Image 1 (cartoon, one colour):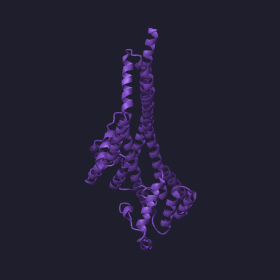
Image 2 (spheres, one colour):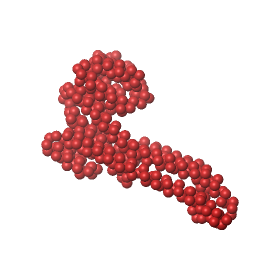
Image 3 (cartoon, one colour):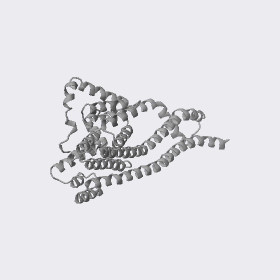
Image 4 (tube, helix red, strand yellow):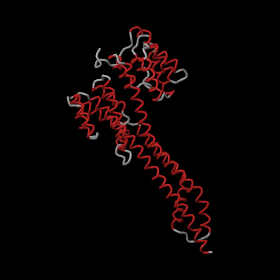
Length: 382
């Protein structure tokens, strides 16, 4: 059976299972899916499991004993029950890829198809190690971007909370003293009093409006059109847009490189990579690339025609096509953009942190100045 003909998504269970599983298989798969979601198995758990399985197989253990060793190793872990069911299926005659496909919330389509290709080519240990490395690099890169985004957001939220507390609780009790003196106050103090009164009076309304906006955005993002609009907008953000684009290019390139190295045909690799992309707008570009390639165009030209990728991506892939090593071209692109994403994330954090602190200092300084100015005027008058 060739890799092109092998399709785990349409594979039927072995004949020895077909009679016994017909009645209960759908119900069992639904319960397994619900259990997997409830336990919230993390990507790093799957990465660790993949590396351990590859190591056991490389040490010379047959597949079923290797799965048994993993089940024993995972006792108490959320993955233990899942791997026990995988071992049971394999022990009964199923292929590993088919057994994994029963747990779509744990093992992605990319994972299952790569295992299927590895089984067809007899390179399971090598592909599992490649999968573990890819998952590890993806997690590391994603964590860098999340840190670059989460830290400034956290600082903005804390700063907003502090200023809101000052304006709604602290400032009114202090400025009330100035108002009772019936004196002409400096304009910073008058502005502070007006702002404080507005926040104090409409704080609940402001909170409701903010929550409603977030709810509307979250609801819209669940729709296909809303998510497409949001994902397209992400790539156009003034500071983070290029970072998001580089992250998606790195994810796409590494996925395609690993799939092609594992023997998946280019059209199948593009279809699987589409499911890996987090940005639906970028995923749509893979659809366009797939259509162009299916009509006879080269993968390099299809990349250029999307208009989303930097020219260097086209030139590296075009060179890879000429040399017959397009897989290495995709891996080189992934490594290059991995480095760029990490450097950009580090730079953003180093620049945004002082900028946010400076802005917060200016706001708090204005509040302090507005409170102290009337006090200085009173002292001078006395």
